[in-house]
Structure formats: C-alpha cells, structure tokens
Image 1 (cartoon, rainbow, N blue to C red):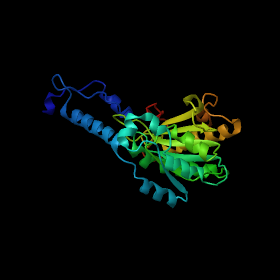
Image 2 (cartoon, helix red, strand yellow):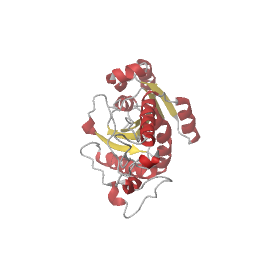
Image 3 (cartoon, helix red, strand yellow):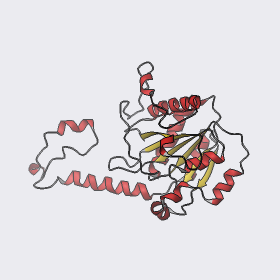
Image 4 (tube, rainbow, N blue to C red):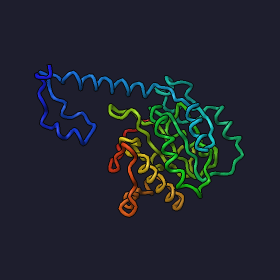
Length: 271
C-alpha cells in the first residue's frame, strides 16, 4: 500500500516542527498512518480535559522536595459543572475559603498554586519539575505552602492569594490541550491578588513542557518576572518580559529533550 502514497515536497521541513505538515497523500485522502496519529492525538486531548488530578501524588512529590502543601477545591463540585460553568472555577468552595481564612501565617512574598485547569496531565507532569527548577533562585523569598487546587480556573489564584495576604500569586495550570500538546502548562503571575483582578493585571508564560518552553527557560522567565514584579509593585501590561536579553550573557542550558529556542504559544482557555 505504501507504493500508492504520494510524498509531499515539504517532507524535509517536518524535522523542525510538530505541526501536521507533509503528511503525504493516498488518493483523495491522507495515508492511514497520519490519520491514526491524528485520531490518537484527538483522544489524548479529550482525555486531558476529563482526567482527574491526582492530588495525593502531587502532595507526595512536593513533600519530597520539602514544600509544605495545602489542598483546596473551587466552587465547581465536579468536572461537568466546571466545564459548563467557568465562573464556578474562579471562586473557592465555602469549605476551602473558610480553611484558608483561618490560616494565621505571616503574609508571604509569593504563593504557588497548582491547578488542574483543562489538562490535569500538564499539572501532574510539569508543575513539580518547574518548582524544583525555580525554588533555588528564590532563597530570599518567603514562600507560602504550595496550594493544590481542583476544578481550577486562572482567577481562582486571586482569591487564594487574597486570603493568604500574599504579595504575588503564581498559578501553574493546565492549558487547553492541543492536538500536539495535551500536557502544556501555563504560568500566570498576579501582584496584589484579589477577587476581581483582570487579565490586564497578569503576566503569562505559556507552553511549559520539555517539547516547548523547557523547565530551565521557564524558571528563568518566572524568576525574572517575580523579581521585577516585587521591585515595581505590579504585574500585567506594565511589566515587560525582557528576560531573553539576559540569556546572551548567561545562557540557560536546555533540559534533556527540550528546545532552548522554543517559543511559547498562547493556547490557554482556562480563565
């Protein structure tokens, strides 16, 4: 059957991208192999949206790295409500709100929140290695216990940060899965978080995964933005990411299997 597949002249370009180009042609259709690969990617994307977050495993991994942890849930009681009612994913459940409000810890410089978002795969795979990469650069920061949030949207971090009196909240959340990236993590930074913050008040680092923006580069960008957010007292449109300018002087080694020059794409739909 392979004798009937017409090769595409763009075939040499496939080594530079995961995009579906130069698939060849069999009659009026694509060959069987790329068709099956597409169906597999589509199934993986659907699974990423509906797969539950293994919070117990996350807590265990974080404890091994000496992070304290907390567990919260949004006002969305289950995945069906989460997908149909995005507003519920932006607010804490009453039980979680009361639990956070009762914490008597001093106001931290930063609180990291790991949220399932639209891809629990991403939160499970990428969040802990990213925290492991950035934590050594934050030795002089007062870091709150890491909050693990289920049925979470980006804005859920605002209420968490407000209740904990954190200067900055960093939401690590699974992005909307694409057909080549079902496990892509997004990072959202908000200074002076409180309920009602707009997207204009946040900075975003997208496509964090070994095949996209790898952990060392993502940690470099995150540390840069955190440092300047604390110095300037703001995030969002007033805080520009000029971290790439520092790489020429101090290049960041790519992680194994990563691409140091990969550009983040905007593939998040979890707000």
